Amino acid sequence: MPEKRKLPDEVIPPEEKIARLVGLIAIKGLENQDAQVALLRTAGFQNPVVAEMLGISENHVAVAWYKSRRRKRPRKGTTKKR
Image (tube, rainbow, N blue to C red; front, side, top):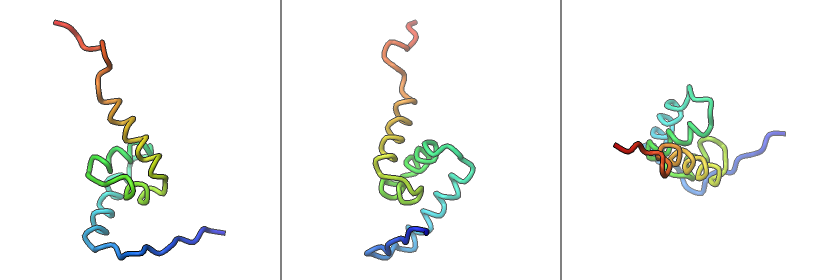
């Protein structure tokens, strides 16, 4: 039996709905959930919104975002000396 979703306490403004829809369109071709998180966070969506959009926990979003940013930084001692 499918889980019933709770109705939000507040109504989501139309601009927010449009922004979320654009975000979902942007990640449509990405199969990797961590890549989806990174794209949505880079686009400016906050952890709770990304979690709701992807149906995952806020903690999962935070960890995926941290790992994404971590991968882009060079590790200590790996920079080339000239």
